[in-house]
Amino acid sequence: MTAGTGLPGTLVVEVLTEALPGAGPQGDTIDQCCERDSDGLPYLNGGRVRACLRAAALARAHLWDEAALRAALEVLPPEGALEPGVVAGFTARVRDPERSALLAALRHDSLTSARALRMLTVDRARTAVDRHGGPLRGSLRTERRVRPAVVFVATLRWSGRATERHGTVLARAALAWRQVGAGECDGLGRIRAHLDDRDTTLALARRTIDCPGEEQPW
Image 1 (spheres, rainbow, N blue to C red):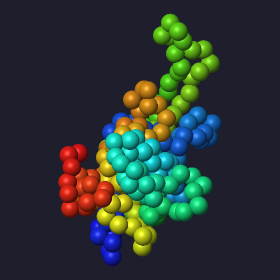
Image 2 (cartoon, rainbow, N blue to C red; image 1 turned 45 degrees about the horizontal axis):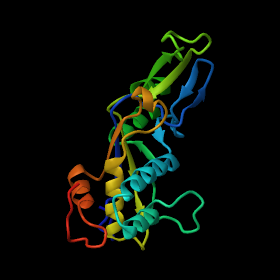
Image 3 (cartoon, rainbow, N blue to C red; image 1 turned 180 degrees about the vertical axis):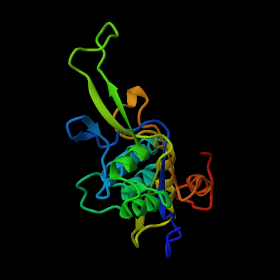
Image 4 (cartoon, rainbow, N blue to C red; image 1 turned 90 degrees about the vertical axis):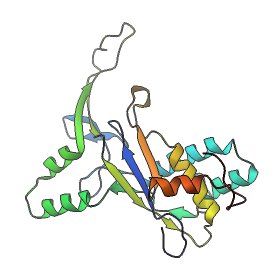
């Protein structure tokens, strides 16, 4: 929980299938590579995380009333909105203690950056498929994907305007978020997300928007 607000302090994202978030070229041998932070480790860009959560929240909002829809937009406003959201800090990095251990090994030269990257990612070659189901000529490309079981954590920062109903909106969005990055049709990028821990997230998500003490089925 975040001190002073009583709201969850972290967003936890567990990768379930190989993922290619924020893909871009890397060198001469990798056509598409997951985004990497300044330490060379994979991470989830905050803008992309926020966009995925916003899509999940608005998909759920069709089942809610107008007050719940307003709350969703207060937490995850659209890009370019005049009023900032009540929560920030969606950039998610490899969780500790794994991240700290990798960085310590890199500083002491007991691990190369290439080896550290291979521990968290896997290289795959693939082609597009023609109408007969065969490989399409000239479409071979190599992708560097995040491995399953890698866990990313974002440290959330709530504004003074945040209330419990905003926590409920974000909890529901986290539970509804299922995929990140390219390759959704191929089963890539499947994820599972929660706030702090899953029990806390479920309890928060069951509360109604207008009546925090009242629960509803999730």
